[in-house]
Amino acid sequence: MASEKKDRLKRILLENSILRGKFTLASGKESDYYIDARLTTLHPEGVSLVADIFLGEIRRDPLIVTVGGPTMGADPIVGSLLCASQRENYPLRGFLVRKQEKGHGTGKLIEGNLKPGDNTAVVEDVVTSGGSVLTAIDAVRNAGALVRKVLVIVDREEGAAQKLGEMGVDFYSIFKISELLGN
Image 1 (cartoon, rainbow, N blue to C red):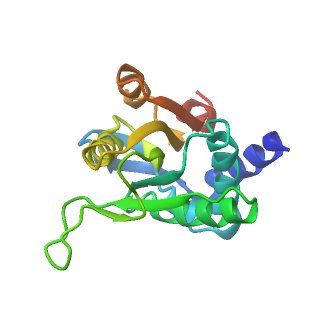
Image 2 (cartoon, helix red, strand yellow):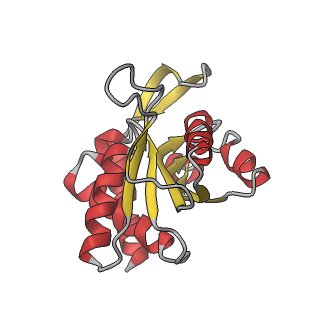
């Protein structure tokens, strides 16, 4: 069943999210392809498949009680994961990490239900060098929580997995870019 979900998700990603051309990535590097994973995470079947696959992986670590990640890539993933976790009677709490502290109201960097001492999973749609995920991890740790696992839809295989491994964080990607591009 899990392989069927992964196969279907791969088809959705290939049909909707892999764009060819000249692109500048968040890391500043240039690429001849771009993964607009939001076209998959804002697709009803796509985000549901991501949530099911991620929840299966999260359940392998019963200490994890919260899930969150950097806004904007993580937003639909977190919402879908919370719904899936409730349906499966395995309720998780969610949070989102802003790029910078809010300049008004409470001035929070982290929105949602993260508490000091929480064991958490950080989710993201795509990682290249890992900059957004590393920033989110720093924010989570500064809030007194422990990041046990990072889950991504696509790893561009450009250093993020290695950096996370060096930090002692378990890393899981549904796909490596080589699986999607056929390299």
